Length: 519
Image (cartoon, rainbow, N blue to C red; front, side, top):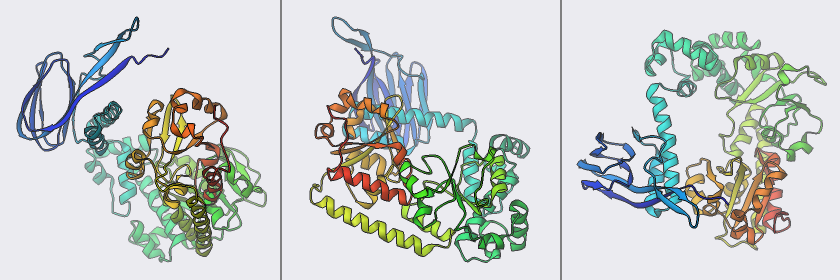
């Protein structure tokens, strides 16, 4: 039998302006939003000021002295299992924490949101969510205390590449010696600073050349160069083609897609080659690309039989830090254009693809057709679905965890953005409204359960988890409203994939299809 070896008890959560003494067997989370509070615990002294947080469990009493302002305090106890027979026995454990104490400034939104949630519910699950958020924030705080991550540097360059950035300015902004910055940047990113800045600017220039009517001079100014001639020289040297010629490349007949295949199909272009990965080509798209060459993940190192000739253009996605060798090898095959993946609204993504390939009207035609299918689906669902009926999308992950993703992922766009179906309050608050995915322990799925649950599995073997008492106890399972979806069909939701996913979702929602998982 599985026993819970550790447990928490939340004694109280409150806002206060009073000084106080905390009993020695209680631990605390103390958050000072505005003001100053002094804390003494086991001869340690802490001064908490604006936006400071402390987590500590003392062996002796904890003294809080309020100098100004107010604080939020969570008082709780840690317990450990010390005896199993003849009955379970738990005792207070003062050594439960990974850290002796946690104290940091700059409390993040996920932590304050979790604290607000706990104040409302005083629920142990919400308390554990708060602790998890604090641990994540503290780890990031410790890391940032040593140095800015190069993710921050790269993000800054990508955001402000149209400004006159220099190595010296960047080093100063992020607190480095200029020479050290250059060496460390190349070590961490794989590019020299000026090389990477040029790469970012030229990739942006590609998008503008394909999707706008700006002149070469105007494109140059948009991406950070003052002179169109200078841009042309840089562009030609980097890609072996002038900006003017790149702009008029007619790739309609020979496009290779490494991403966005569903959106490409939506504007009426069937690629001649596709990266064989479910995040690019889910199984439901395979019938639409019967004649395409399927490229393996290592295709750039392989000899490809390009039937009919090499592609005239490659459609790719933007990596956070693209590998320099990969970019060079890609260019040897054909000119490429890259978009940010999984950041655009799904319909705007189709429009953007339409602009890149001069197929704006085809994009609008597909969108109109898709929206008509959505309206037909709404009419079908109105007949048998209560307006308060809730729907959720859940993905089984390793280690008994479950992913609940934002609406852009795993077919959620159909359900929440287009059909306007309701999600459980907790998913609405923690996932859809802030537009971010979360991971939860499977034992807490009941707190996020919907009346109708779409569950994404990675393999048939994974379905065995749905026979455990946690899942079998859910109301949706008892009503046979838990619907199995294959990750191979729902990994990406771009363009035509949305239409195919809608067919599957609608069959479940209308009762025409049922999963074979019920006892």
